[in-house]
Image (cartoon, rainbow, N blue to C red; front, top):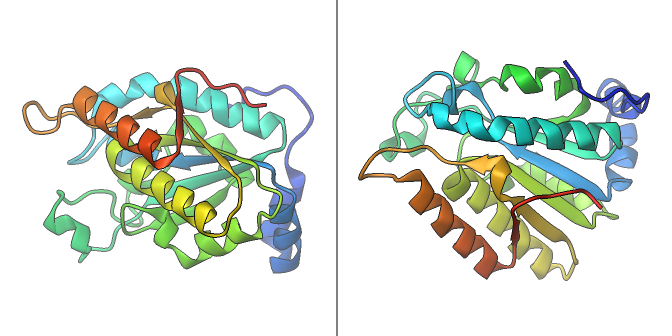
Length: 220
């Protein structure tokens, strides 16, 4: 259920998806504040080889931020892990989030917002490798701020965040990239992948790269 009670539904975005590229381009060009939700899918929290129920702790803050962006008619992107059976990533990580599976689906708490978001499916750890993602980011000519949330902090969130920072630096575009620490998380495997240790390490790398890590985020 959508939390927002305001009558500011993003009808334009729904029309964009139905009417084609011209309307979509106009909608992308107006976005100044963008929320990117990375891999908040069942395969990292509810079911699968990489699922960790500890990530439930970050869901309320993730939902709060998605609802806030929805209510204010700002841009929302959902990134979904959707791997092929022969994915090269499986040489390093266990099989997870196969395209078309339950694991690859957005969690139920965010389902009501799907039709108001731009959705991209990826077969690697950084959505920036997707041609259509890069194309749409380039069309956001008024973009001033990105809030980046989701899972996993030290893999898909960090890789996308640093790729975005490098991209904007390369074209000399000033875009603030913010990581709210309570709206991200990573999986835990004792003595192998300690979630707190790897999460804190990722925060340090992202800060060094020019991203801004904050404890509490309120959209400007």
